[in-house]
Image (cartoon, rainbow, N blue to C red; front, side):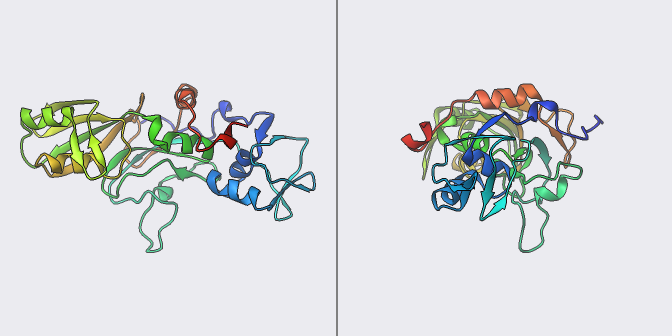
Length: 259
């Protein structure tokens, strides 16, 4: 079993200048989207002055930022890959006391981590977690088209006709879902790659062609794999993996974000 790093790699060091919204998000005050609202509502000040522009630049070590009058400082960005087991919720906390992915992050840095998207309770495999709200929002944007690869096992053999339908595209309630790639590992096991991040997308596609999925495992997120990470364990992303994620284009909801 590979040893787990005891601290984040050096590449997570903060830049000298940050946009205010990113500063507030990395300080653990709120998610990036919520941070925009807090700033626009006048709850954040820079050097004693209320600032309502989320995209203004802040210099670390020079500017003082406060939230509701309390000084805040950003945390170093942390990027984690978890090999999620079954019967685990992709949420920060659960009111019913059920196990969440946060319960599996023993030894992780004490920062405010969030899952990037979700896997349903019984889907296993790769889940990314980070305190970098800007990157998380970019990865979740539909236009990002990050390829995700799954291994799906079924209760009956998969026919060549079903495989071809997955490749051509399946009409679903929320639009056509088409596999980027689909092939059989054995008669009961499908390897399927999609760039769609819709809820339960693989299970719904398989049901549409007449198959019930017995188990579903996400084995790759773009070029990132879970190789060497046992089920229920985690590791830091490598500098190369983070660089690949950051090279994806940004998708902004409005023109203000370009300022």
